[in-house]
Length: 229
Ligand SMILES: *Cc1c(COP(=O)(O)O)cnc(C)c1O
Image (cartoon, rainbow, N blue to C red):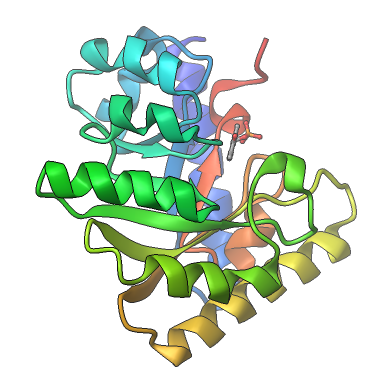
């Protein structure tokens, strides 16, 4: 895509984010540009446009692109992560957003300890109960948090949600509001070892609703780069 198109798309997304957040009375969420399927040369111009956070969902693809990205970005791992692949990305990511089972947390913890690090993670929630997308059901979040909170190699920093595909805005808004409600409730509970700081929700189809409902981060791909091939 041309740099002008990229710039225009970004401007549109940022404008929508700002107005939607204002409409809901929330701070403007941080924009994570989802760069999966796009080559490094298409990603690098984001740096000059003020985008510092990128999201990738596949370990292999991220590994291949990292050298060309030249440490210019904070990388968020946003997709399903196999336990045996954590070792390939642990030193290169700023936040693993997709922790949805104890075994995965244990492996991150084990490697983080070996590297004397604390790795920031989010617990992935499936608000509509779609296990094929990963994520725990809302009623299982507390149990998972209790198990992973004592792990010293993790810094448990909040929640991430992937919404179902739907054109029904009222339905989606209800789910986003319930996620924000869960996030606020957990924050109020102030569990030891859990810092409820980030609520990552909203993608190209629904980030405006997410911003209106109190997301702190949105993960936007195709609205910035155009449709994936
Ligand atoms: C691909 C992806 C996104 C971005 O999707 P778009 O619809 O292109 O904005 C966000 N979150 C996750 C987990 C993804 O896999």
